[in-house]
Amino acid sequence: MRFAKRLTGAVAAGILATAGLTAMAPSAQAATGWDRCPHGSMCTFSENNGQGSIAIFQFGSPDLRQQGMDNHVGSFWNRSGKWMKLWDGYNYTGDNLGSAPAYTGPINQAGIAPVSSVSGQ
Image (cartoon, rainbow, N blue to C red; front, side):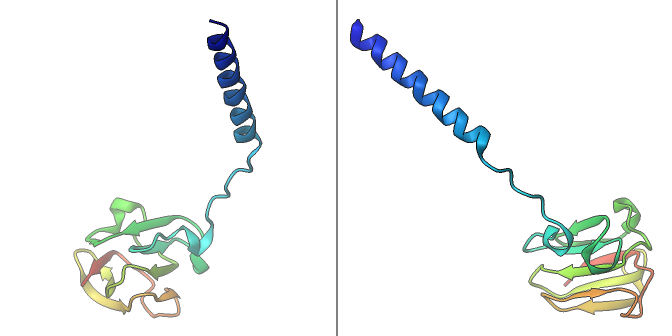
């Protein structure tokens, strides 16, 4: 019986010590800018240089109104590992900008400022 009490006390002390270490551990900082775009995705940002709102795609979207990004894409990063296209019309119509894997860029310098759909190839 005495051994059981000591064991219970030792376990409780270990739990309290672990809880104390957890409480003191520094919190991880949230990703910002370009770093918010996960590997294997195509990301569009509402502002230049990966700033502002972000939309993340695996395959694309025929209508960026669904993501609240229609005509509000300021920059993009293609981390999908495949070619992607940004279109100025809905349902992948109109002029487009092809993006090679690993490309980042501002939309306004690419010559296709209003982006309304994104497709993967």
